[in-house]
Amino acid sequence: MGYIRAEVHLLIQSAGTSDPLEIAAQKNILVLYENLGTNIWGYFTNANRIPMIHVNNKLDEVAARFTIAHELGHYALHPKLNTPFLKHNTLLSVDRIERQANLFAMHLLTIGRMPEADATLASFLSQCGIPEEIHKLYR
Picture (tube, rainbow, N blue to C red):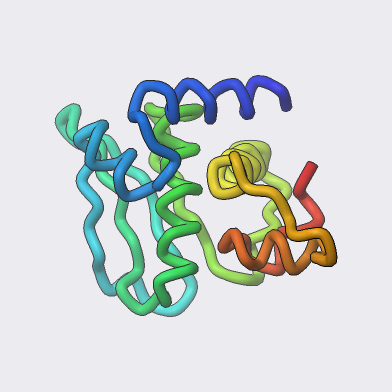
C-alpha cells in the first residue's frame, strides 16, 4: 500500500495543500452537496470529462470532509470508476477499491500531523476526522 501514500504525496505536492476542499478546487473537481438519502455518504463521477464529488448534504462537517478525502482517493487511484461511498454498515467494505480510497483518505487527513504525547491512536485519528469505524485500517 506504499503506492497509496505516494499518490497522496503527489496530489498534495501538485495542489500545494492537504485540505480536501482546496485540492478539489485546485484540480477543478466540482463538489456538489445533494440529498443522497440515509445510506450514501458520497460518490465520485466523471461526466463529460468533468470530475465531480457528490456529498450527502445531511452529513456533518467532519463526515463530509472525510467523504471528500475518500472521493479524492477515487479521483487519484480510480479516475474512470464511479463508485458509491456507503454509510456505516458498508463503510468497512472488503471491496479493494473502497479500501484503497479509505486508506487514501486516512493518509491525506493525517499527513503532517502528530499525536500529542498522551493521545491514543483512536483519539488522534478522531481529531484528524477519521470515522471510528475505520480506525483499524490505519497503518
